[in-house]
Image 1 (cartoon, rainbow, N blue to C red):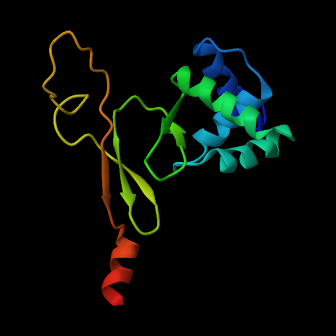
Image 2 (cartoon, rainbow, N blue to C red):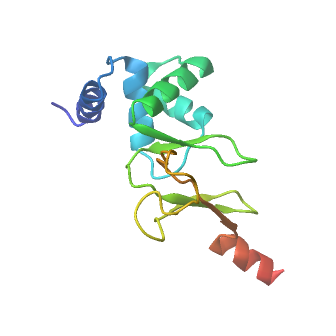
Length: 149
């Protein structure tokens, strides 16, 4: 197996393990998400996947990303005022920091206790499965730029 085939084989294995049918768009988008440490928007992922598959419509991109998210392979983060961002699902219940100036997003480890990291006051009939916390502020570059001006 050549090094170019290894990521494809890994993507195919991950899809099968998740009970999904293996298709070129699914493999390509899963590889595009997995190859990045960033939180990428659908357009960027589509551009990267098209380097493998050729043409891929934006609608097909969203459909595949939704299927990958539903299968637990990809995490979709929707932050108000920003387009949806995608990253590899690590099942670690991490949170996010968003820079108010440049929009950069970075992961923040769960700060307190076990998932879901908070103890909301709800009747015990509720089944809480996740907490989504977004920290807002300025990244180091934007903070330095603000103090320099």
